Image (cartoon, rainbow, N blue to C red; front, side):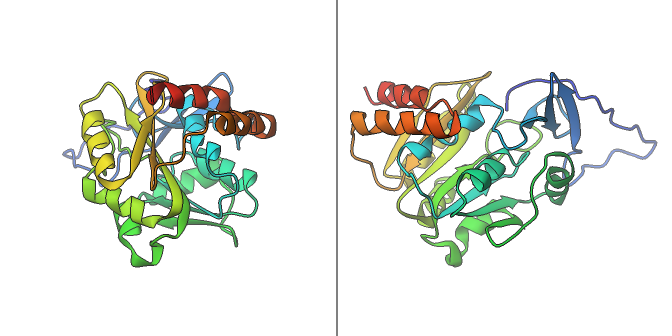
Amino acid sequence: MLIRRKSIEQVESSRRPPRKPKFAPITLSEQDGVRYLHFGTEWVQGAMRIRKPDWPELEYAQQMMAWMLYIEAPRAIAQLGLGTGALTKFCYRTFPDARITAVELNAAVIAICASMFKLPPDDERLRVLEMDALDFVDDPANLAAFDVLQCDLYDATAKGPVLDTPEFYRSCCACLAPGGIMTVNLFGDHPSFAKNIKAMKFGFDHVICLPEVHDGNVVALCFKRRPAEDAAALGARALAIVAATKLPAKSWVKGIQAAQQ
């Protein structure tokens, strides 16, 4: 998000009167070995390094994994908004004992993830649902069903999350098991930021924002229950994450500590 790359595909002209589509057209671009997903604009909706398809290429996507500092062995993870499947693929490969669920409203996004971004097919651990994220979190079957939610819900306008009400975030919290955490991608320099933070605090016991990355992306960590503050434990856990995954977990700890000062 908030990274501009010119699409290599051109929108075809039409002699028919313009009609508002249900979904924006999906376009792709590639640069320096990285493939990008767009919704018909220059705004990046996700990225994949072609030689490392399971790696979360964008820094904000890496920050979306900061819940790993608190949850070492998740049993169930849900991704709201599929994008290029970066987080879904990484979780699927990194946590072989976890069930991974991805929720995406646009069927074309699901199809392009499978054909161009190496999303594996559904199996006993992975399921990709074509449905509205609001319906998913409001489903009673999902109450307390997940240890982790990862929320990245943007449309082609990239003006802020498309779901951002206090009621939505309260439903997200209800989907988390005790000790559960949700990470959310926000725009730090957009009016939607303050609105979302206020709504998150309505639904969650504790909210922390990591430092801004890229051109405005801010990842928020939303805790169902405020965790105990243990700097030594976080530091040790960060070292273990770096060793196991090469994710920049030490910078997450610094960001969390700075946010709580």
